[in-house]
Amino acid sequence: MPSVTKQDIYDIIIEMNQPIPLRPLPGYKDVQPFVYAGFFPVSNEDYNDLKEAIEKLSLSDSALQFEPENSPVLGFGVRIGFLGLLHMDIIRERLEREYDLDLVVTNPSTDYKITLVTGEEIDIKSASEMPEVTKIAEIREPWINGEIVVPQDYIGAVIQLIVSKRGRQKNLSYIDERALISFEAPLANLLTDFYDQLKSVTSGYGSFNYELADYRAEDLVRVDFYVAGEMVDALSVMCHRSESQSLGREITKKLKEVVPRQSFQVSLQAGINGRFIAREDISAYRKDVTAKLYGGDVSRRKKLLAKQAKGKKRMKKFGNVEIPSEAFTVMLKRD
Image 1 (spheres, rainbow, N blue to C red):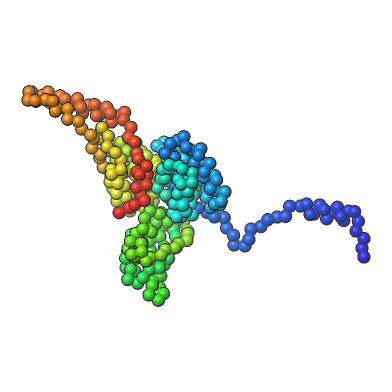
Image 2: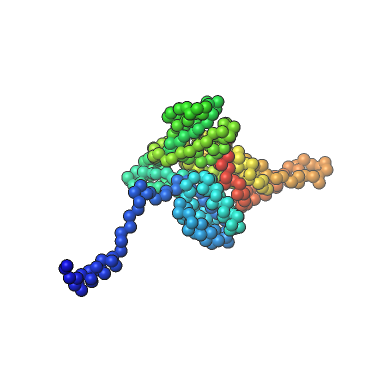
């Protein structure tokens, strides 16, 4: 039997103290979020509380990714990445219930891959991060492969819904009395109210699941929204050029319903690259300054009205329009 020397024992001890390389299990992949939304406290004083609450939630939710965000309109907040809309709703509910936070949540968006004319590739997670159009060579958006299981009576309505979201049917098969519809569609068009519309057209019988497929180059534009002549970056949204006109008109009409009236006229506009494509006006409150006039020269009445108009013009120049939190989620419910 060979003898064991002190050097052998020393070598064994050294080898045992070496760190063991850790390797992930075969097939394991890091979780990558593909739905993003900005979370802002109603009061900027609660920003640190919001940040601390999200850090605590991330300890038990490895899929939760976040980074600080600053908006000229909403102040300091956090942009959070989620696995889907359900994940976003759960986090929002927990922040409001468990941590007693009043939040403004912006319209959810996905990430886009942009190739610049210089050849550099960048990822953006919100429309406000999009660089100037002259610097962009190509924009790619994520597409998904989806499956919908639905009773056969609703096949036509579901296919029509898919087409309205720029989707394409791939296959149709039957399982007993149900149909399995396979399709592909851009993820951004499914982030608003697709699931609610699916439940509506199928009387609640439709079920839907999907997975990320790839990124495809599309003719995408950023639609900006202006309130009283000032661009609100938190309202900007990415969409296909063919949908930009109707989207601009639809959102400005919805903003008109939630933005309160002022003592001066407020214009709501949608634009692409500085060119306006839609407009709605909120009329001003008007006080009857001629109520105390009884008869007399009509020129006096005109003088009072002209004075009122001049005052409203000055108020419009220096007045601030408060934008309610409902305005930042109008894209969640589309017609």
